[in-house]
Length: 228
Image 1 (tube, one colour):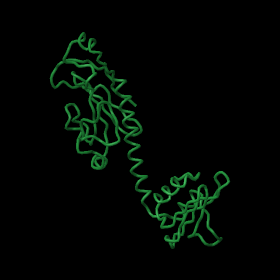
Image 2 (tube, one colour):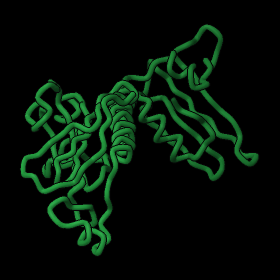
Image 3 (tube, helix red, strand yellow):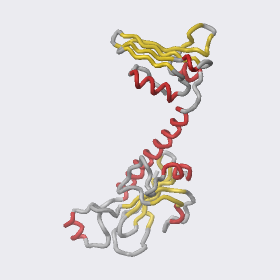
Image 4 (cartoon, helix red, strand yellow):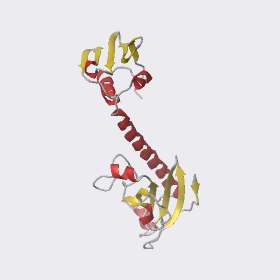
């Protein structure tokens, strides 16, 4: 949802700033700002996200926006954003090849500079939010991957008990091109867990105690198991 949308007007007024659009996409707020010489965009995020992902160059690993992230910090420190009490990350459109408000229209055209509209920047904000949410999801998946394996998790991905009434030792098996494979996991005695694949012959013996361990084995053996 977008509110109070205005068009961008390029000019050479120093410290000029106008909010041209505010909105919310997938529950995340964003702000688009016209700074005269060039526009900027900001996405609200958590401080935990910034603490974990801001790199030594004040960029954000795994997040790709126009020209790269150029601001991380409190949104209310930005000119024209005093009402936003949230951490944020932002980027600008003042890079090589971008339309520049400090030179004439003829010069911009001669250099082939690109002029940005409010709708274009809103679309970039939504793309950045998609990336932001994916990074958060990946963080959670990483935590889940390192958690202790449970019989509920194993049953969810298709494992069954080796014997009725014994639910701490489970297995999953199948065939690939006529060659059998099996993964056996003993939750009570992890060192007795193993995986075998006959296509070609490979065997893994050792503890399989986390979903991350299981995913590594499935990838190594290239067996058709979908892990959640």
